[in-house]
Length: 210
Image (cartoon, rainbow, N blue to C red; front, side, top):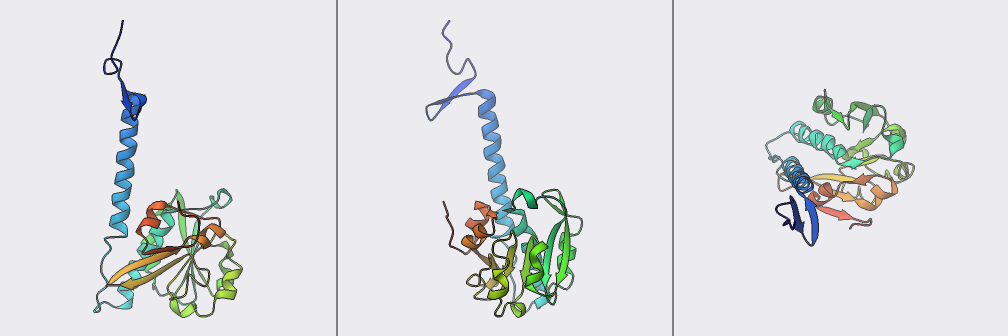
């Protein structure tokens, strides 16, 4: 008996045959990826504005949210995938507790998030994310050299942060929080940044982008 592809529950897509269940699974996966893309866009591209009337406290409240979400779109090597997820702040805390509030009760890849305050960049070896604000970013190139081959996601604000070996630089442009990425530095640190995050960056420098 000759049965058509429709009768057997098989469909052809781009010359390949799929059973109905496979086709449905693929459609679900595609919808899931689309939904993730929309969520990412809402988190980053359509971020709240920072008006001139807002204080530095309000600005860093937004940056605290960005810092947490950056970590959700970066993959650390397997040997660093257990235990608490540690976000470190170097020097004075520009967030004034807002970062602790942003991560309270939340997790990254099922790992509880901990905030650690350190005095110097060199102390960041046990951190997963290391935030360095403008006041701490002057002449840190030598200090950063000890971290460059370690799986530490460095995030800063100074104009030359990426040139000094940092991975993500946050800044305010047109009253919005923007960010740019040093993909080469991320690869040196053995960190894999999601393509979705790379697409949302204002600029991506270095690395092997596909």
